[in-house]
Length: 192
Image (cartoon, rainbow, N blue to C red; front, side, top):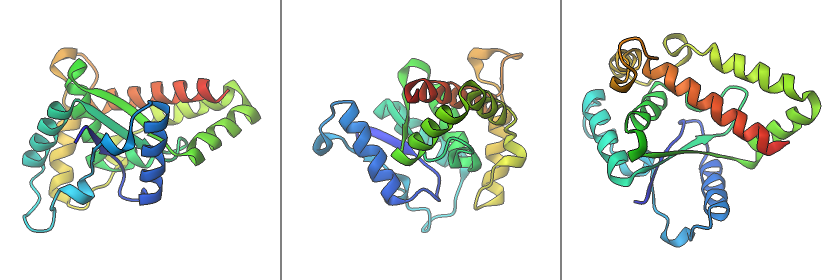
């Protein structure tokens, strides 16, 4: 694979295909030589019991090996990616790699169009409201996982602090929220 895609389980195959097609088109990448690792196709989560720590190590190694992680945003008002504990953890793992991992948001035309409509209708207050909404995100109450044991392990990881930020730096979860806020601003500027 040349890329890893992180996405929420409620994202449709159509959304994934559209966003990846647009990503290839706008990045001048040849779709026939752009290979994307998708957990729904590549990870067998049914044969062996889930072990969040082992799976996190595998995800980190995969991100390190490929160096490019795409994050699917299908709705800017409340991104499904931020409702899944695993997705937030995957983004935090990618962030922990620093410059060794290129982390890029990809979006559907519907999500981009809705953001553009909001920008035209409300202007700057729209971005302010979305920024505040994202800033109020709480990983403890705002995410879910299929397996409670995985969720507890992932929440412990997300409550930790990246070593680069020091003991007073932001938590992994706060770093992810800040990243999504910055993506929102960039998408908003592109839309207007």
